[in-house]
Length: 198
Ligand SMILES: Nc1nc2c(ncn2[C@@H]2O[C@H](COP(=O)(O)OP(=O)(O)OP(=O)(O)O)[C@@H](O)[C@H]2O)c(=O)[nH]1
Image (cartoon, rainbow, N blue to C red; front, side, top):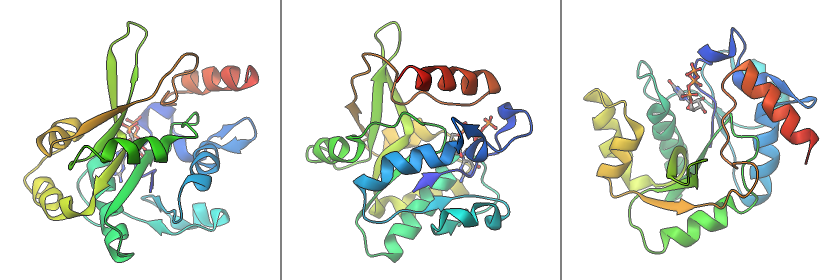
């Protein structure tokens, strides 16, 4: 599930999922990287779904509206996966155009030793390991607990994932951080420059 249900406040009036990066919407970059790795794909998007109609993908609005934050998108992903009879679901953020080509196999490998969620992680400029909780693999059995947590006002994605026994899967980032987030027009310009050098 590509999480694209946020408000994009930092993108100065533009929907992050649809801003153009090197001639294609940001969401299209994530889609191109994820599509070869999975058998089913959908987009979690709030707002007018016809804006995404050109994508020919299922569009899933938040199943528990009124709960701002990406955890509501994770619940929507779990609900969608449960409907498909799946035991686990991957989420990625729509603002990560450098998503790694081994995202899915790497998380599946880490899940062999982890019963909870598996979250992607990479090292920052100082060498500290940083989790990227919007990009992870989630057991669908956490659906009920997540719904209850959201009802109780839980907003903190990392805190909730840790409480469920989350593990981290580290991705090497020798050049571009594969989980570099495009949040602002400046980030978009940086991503353009990075892509020009790829
Ligand atoms: N379903 C859903 N997804 C969200 C929500 N808020 C954020 N996300 C998603 O979570 C990921 C990270 O979002 P952020 O960058 O923290 O928030 P954002 O609302 O997209 O952007 P800002 O308003 O600039 O903070 C993105 O993929 C968002 O689409 C929400 O309320 N519901």
